Image (cartoon, rainbow, N blue to C red):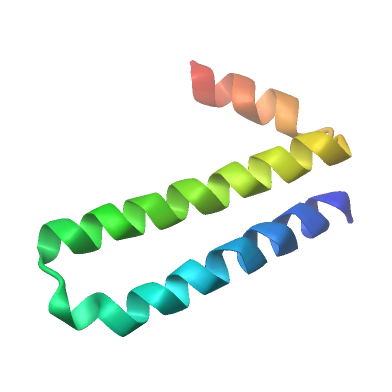
Length: 69
């Protein structure tokens, strides 16, 4: 349940920027689209990891260790 709460927080944090991006998407070139998408994913991931860590999600430690390898 705690991981679900972290995922919900990340989804809510990403919803606003996503909608903002959709309004401007057609006027952007490829580089701007890639940069905006990357920034959105990075922000959502940061929120998820921060909330999960704050709530003590037990699976977070092993997953981060695997990513660091």
